[in-house]
Amino acid sequence: MNDQIINYLIIVGLVQTVIFLGIIIYREYQRSTYRWLLILLLFVVAIEIFYGWLYFNNLLASWPHLLRLNSPFVLLVGPAVYLFAKTAGGKALRIGDLWHALPFALCVCYFAPLYFSSAHLKVQYVAELYQGLSFDSYFWGGLRRVQQLSYLLMASITLYYQSQSKTTISPDTRLSFILMMAFGVIWGMDVYRYFFQFDLLSGVTDTITLSIFAIILVIIGLSANQPTLANLNTNIRYRTSSLSSELRNLYKTKIEEAVKFSKPYLNPNLTLPKMSEQLAIKPHHLSQILNEDMQTGFSDFVNSLRIEEAKSMLLDKKAQHLKIEAIAEAVGFNSLSTFNSSFKKFTATTPRRFRAKNLSQNPTTL
Image (tube, rainbow, N blue to C red):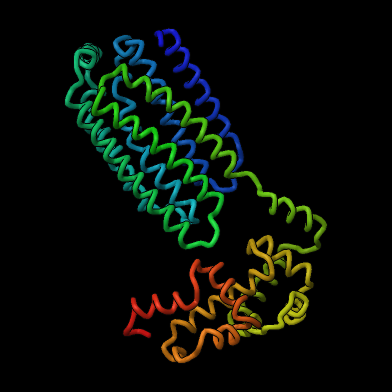
């Protein structure tokens, strides 16, 4: 591959990343956390591609004051990927998450004397880089790769537990899996280069793959904000609804209080009309609240509450003499097969295994 083609690929990658960054910045997002993490990742990718172009064309000697400004930002990629995975499970970011930026801050402090040195000293530094990589390159290069591996593993564990704790994997979690896999491939290529061909020019390969990573990021970003077919159908179904925000809040409170105190879901013959009559809520308003506010249908709503009740009974030492059939009947199921299938749907295990597992783990509390 000749120099002209490489230059062309780098420039195209840089331009596309900047365009993508603009798309993400100006696109409205329901979840601002996703938006800012994507902006951070695309910003770092743009910086890295730009510096790949500078290194490849030996332009740092002409613009010495740009030297090493990219080094701290690369240390934000790993944390951003991990936090992306963390928020996919519904967890909000906290002030304490700022500690993930500590390597970035340390790198800034380390290179601060270089940043404030004269242009002459920076030109000498650049010349030494092209003669042979310095301690700075090996140390921060190695630290970055170890750090990114750590965050890659943390993101993997986080996504694994998210997928295990839910019966269905959410779209956000799937997107995070894609992001993690793309990041893992690029990390692997980067590590290979570090051990077998660690020099400035060979980094061009990483630079080009970063532009591909940018495309994946944007696909993830745009997909994360797309309404699902189910949501579209829900919006159309309730488009002419007379449910006001005041009534919605009032009805939600009624539902929550009924679930907590009267527990209508224990009635095996419970239907949507019967529950709406008990709560003095119009059936279509009850259905709308369950679909729009609780993201579930009536059947899943009732069965999920029954399963939670069953789990409590299975863990209650006073109910250990009860058979699974008796518990199923007590929580409102008309048949054992329906209970077993619902239990597995919401817990990814069977009632017998759930009871046996918790008995073995907590023998003194049951």
